[in-house]
Amino acid sequence: MIKRKALSISLKIAIGFLIILSSFVSGWSTTSEGDLPSKTAVILHAINNQLVVPDEQLTPPSFLTGSNSAGGVAFEQESLQIPVSDGSVLPGRMHKPVDAQDAPVIVYYHGGAFMEGYGNIDTHDNIARAIAYRSNAIVISVGYRLAPEHIFPKAVDDSYDALIWAYEQAEEFGGSQEKMIVAGDSAGGNLATVTAMKARNEGGPELQAQLLYYPLTTFHDRPLDTRDKYAEGGYLLSRTVMEKARDSYTPGEEMWENPYVSPLDEGVAEDLPPAFIATAEFDPLRDEGELYAHKLNEEEVPVEAIRYEGVMHGFLSFYEVLATGRHALDDSVEFLDRTLNDEQMMATGFRIIERAQPSGMERIREETEAHMAAVYLLGLHVQRQFQQWVETSMLAESEDE
Image (tube, rainbow, N blue to C red; front, side):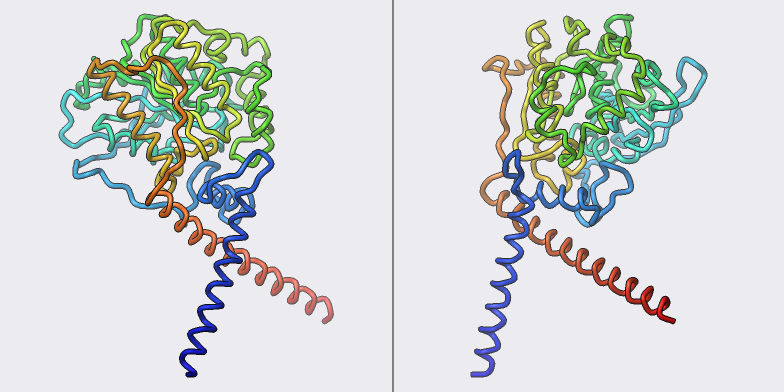
């Protein structure tokens, strides 16, 4: 009888705890802009409330990171020194299959608002590594120089010089000069597509594709709904950061009219390589990424654009824990495979594809992991409150003495 009562009490406590936990997660998921999936809400709550402070702005919190597998293919990593035209040397990093032969070469430009302290080859190494593993390509990350010390066009020049260097070294690395690709996320997406423009304009390497993840495509003050709706700071990219980036990277307004700054408004897309463009539902940059996809299509550049529902700007950095991040990586690599194999890219013609949130068992797993993470966050909160109470009590005692 006593055991039954104890079991009943324990069960009631567990149910009560689950109800309370679910109410917390539900509260984090409810925003004025719409309801967030639980996993997205938990990640944003952790970062926005500094319960978990990443080393850099877009680095996944350590309690949410998982392992990465090469899928049975042996890979190696190498630090690089990339010489550029002004005599400087840029840091770089290469991920490649150990026995690479005639492999595609992807030159990757990291995100981070063009500014020092917001992103580098270390903070975005997981993305470069994941693309290499999924595509069996050689991926070279470029540590281009950053504002405010280095303003436009330094990052563009560095990006293009790095492409030239990668092209010249391709065969030595086990790659193919006939399979050159540029890729990047956010600010890096901007650099990837303008590097493709520069290569076209200056007779540089012929590129086979460009992979653009939630790219910044215009510095102009265009009336874009998503810039207004999602830029208040809750979705990892705020209006404050965007304005700071613009002031730091392009301090002169005349710079915004350069096609290598605002490819959406000022650039000519004709003869650019086929493009994959990923946008995120809760992202200030969503509209301009999709408008750029329309621009490419109108100027007869093959393009596949996918909007990923339920995620925020920078979601690819969290692919270890967000299934949607893994889907975006897989979609981009599938696009690349079709492009390199000269297959028809979109049988139905151009459109913005809306990739729905995970469903079925994948959705159950996401919800379970989200609630487990919420338990961790609540524990952190209690721990910090207790520490503050102890510190306050000790301070009060010392003052009384």
